Amino acid sequence: MTDANGRSRRRFLTAVGAAGVAGLAGCSAESVDDGATSEPTDAVDTDEPTAGTTTGEPTESMADTLVVATYPPFVNAPSTSPGAWLKREFESAFDATLVYQTPDSELNYYIERAVQGVDFEADVYVGLDTGQLIDVDGQRGEGQFTDPLFAEAGAIEGLDAVRDGLQFDPQGRAVPFDTGYVSLVWNATMDDGEFVAPETFEDLTRPEFAGDLIAQNPATSTTGEAFMLHTIDAFGADGYLDYWERLQDNGVTVLGNWSDSYSAYLNEEAPIVVSYSTDQVFASAEGQDLDKHQIRFLNDQGYANPEGMGRFADSDAPRLAEAFMEFMLRPEIQAGIAQRNVAFPAIADAPLPDDYAQYAKEPPESVTFTYDELEADLGTWTDQWARRFAGG
Image (cartoon, rainbow, N blue to C red; front, top):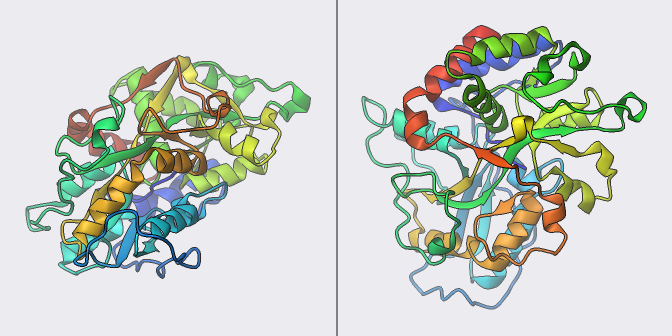
């Protein structure tokens, strides 16, 4: 499960928006870092480096330390995280050390450094999505930064195995490494076991579901942005704000990020949360009651949200970074990431357990906007939402 918050173009709205929405919802949300002054957390050494054999064909010229930047839940989620396992596996396969950086403002931190002309140590970013790439491209030029932030991936090994439909970067910088579908997760044990989640967007605004939904701020959360985009697909650019007015009238709680929202859901503050359709993968692995982790695809649809990785153009370890990206696409690593990141692998032949498909739910219909579709309107849509509902 992932939640990449921080949108550089909207950093002012981000800082103002989370508190404003929490006020509307009557709940508290953690403040959101604006990224302008934040420092990355200390490099996260999630486990003792493991001495291992060299199977990845490193050469003498290859650097021996790789700095991987990512969003904090990739290393320390409230459910499970692939970070520590991935570090061990990589260090076992290569004569190298992997170090994580997890700044609170995530990719926005590196965009701000580029704008300020300040160097940074990261070699690879893990967790890119379409909106973030649009932010990167929107910041480039016009007195911001001119050199590319990310290099083109090129013909790296394993790229041809990525499933059709997951490539989301028309410039070939981001390489998909997993994907998920944003959906509703609901608790069938609420209301003395009588609760049943609504089946459509319209049903969600009915009085019997008043106060039942926890969502996220689209300006500060990937899941929040995906849910907003899904409402735009359902009601159109001219109708989604009216729909959100009805959600607000029906007592929706909007928090700043997925982690806060999911924690509130687990505390049974509401019976429905905007999350991911792979939720039962985590729940079953943890031995939890699956009645508390039911999946609902509104209108029989889920919003597709592939995640990618990209090599920073100024990396001091470009060959090791490329080797890492190829390593991430190995079938056994794909399977490990999918299970720990509670997602679907990016390739079709990852050796997942037989019961994985039972718990990882795919929607009858997948919905998404392309880079080109979002490039023109994403900022406008999100800013309109923030002005209406977050006081931005």
